[in-house]
Amino acid sequence: MAIDNTMEKDISKQVAGVTEKRLIPVEGPEKEDGDTEYKRQVHHASVNRLRSLATQMSYRLDQGNGRCTYQLGVEDDGCHSLLDYDCITESARVLEAIARSLNAIVVERMMIQGEVTQGEDGNPILIPNAKPAHIHEPPFF
Image (cartoon, rainbow, N blue to C red; front, top):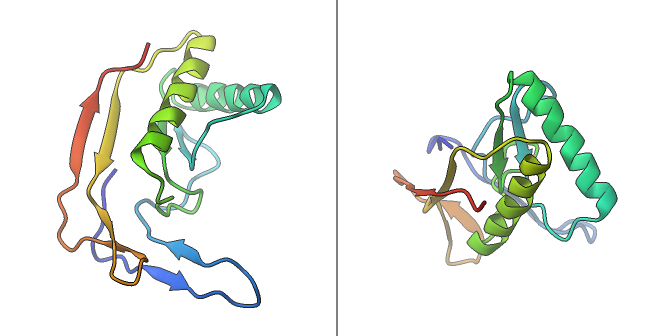
């Protein structure tokens, strides 16, 4: 995941009871076709949700001729989900199990940390000129 430090953060304030929405772009918006899928998080999924995710992964695998990429912790609009490491790790476990159910395997799992921090006001901010730590981890299964 590449981060463009020239992108601006946009934090909209609470208006008429709407929860504050934080937008920190880290990727372009997700495309409907292609081999890349963005997922905010995947955990505590029902059987129907797991089936839906398997169908979606099968589609992405077809689009990529047997390979696909999942960007965990990224919203469909390409913004950082601001989830913690444990939540993303659990989501990776679920997606890896789904891949195995489709007779696919995870060949690389890379976690990227260090590009976002919490500002004095409690809002997330991009670290200027950050060089995120890329943590290569073996697949779970």
